[in-house]
Image 1 (cartoon, rainbow, N blue to C red):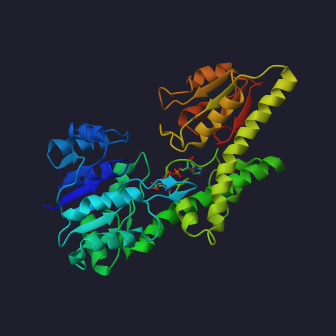
Image 2 (cartoon, rainbow, N blue to C red):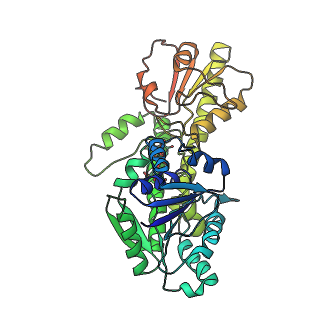
Image 3 (cartoon, rainbow, N blue to C red):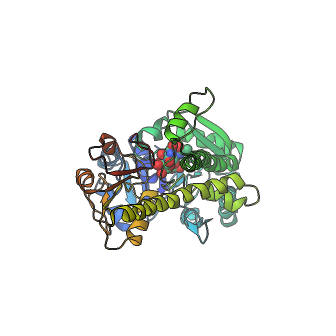
Length: 405
Ligand code: SAJ
């Protein structure tokens, strides 16, 4: 039975480890956080993701998944650690480097080393040099590849198995060996390429979505000035057989789409103009929403001679999840909170129980109390909204009511 070491037991590393273990591989998961390691060894999870808890429970119970803070000798090493930014959106690959350093002494002839972490183009080749610098005898004797994940949070366990994957080795033999390995647990098609193309492919997938959303967001601001309902406009334009405009919103969040394009702009600043502008447009859209809310509050104040009760609906980075990472809605809520200290602002996020600094209320409460209702995230619960109070002012940034901005 093949033994796999997964370095990094986060949003991708843990689900992948549990999946491989349940497909019969012996998996030794590594994480620097002792609490994470302890939780997993108890058969529990530190991440909320449908079906993950059961997968981890089963894998730990049948002995195929263990966790530790140190790696052990294995046949396959998967690097699934974060690649954060330093300074102004400069990718920091130091976690990939130290994960690689930790397994270099353990490598033996015939092993397979794979990076899954989102990485700047060229990282896999750099890690090859790093490995061979210290272990020159392994030249041409180990396989080194890059294989990005492309799963959607909320559907990870299904997509890990069923999505197609792009697999790029530093040479032909590496690509073939990596494909053979993923065939053990992936039912989607496995597409061979080289490591640089696979690295760029991951970045391009999320950048392309970012640019498409930027187009929709820009359109929403143009339509506001032109007094056109952007939702009606998009649905009409999308009747064209070759047009498919995405949905404007309160900005772009999450840890992927709002982040990955910077890996391209940092490496190719002279060429990546559209990609950089898309990031700017999507970030600007959140600021624009803040301005719209402030203006509505000021106008209300002038007309009614009092500050309105404002309800901000949704804090998550996208509909129907509890994830607040890089959330534009949270940014907007915090900006309004800072701009109107002491005023009555109602925060609603039905997918979480508590927030550290914002007091959360129910949607029912918000509807009954607010003079201004601001829809920031298209949660299903908000779609039940039916205007009862004709004086209630609505700002719908996510198009879930039939009210214009
Ligand atoms: N959004 C819009 N308008 C839209 C679609 C999305 O404003 O029409 C916003 C969302 O509200 C959210 C952000 O974009 O703030 C991103 O949400 P998302 O659902 O598009 O994507 P993520 O970040 O949850 O997951 C993405 C996926 N990538 C693509 O769809 C190309 C997923 O497949 C990747 O695996 C994931 O990034 C990742 O880990 O890279």
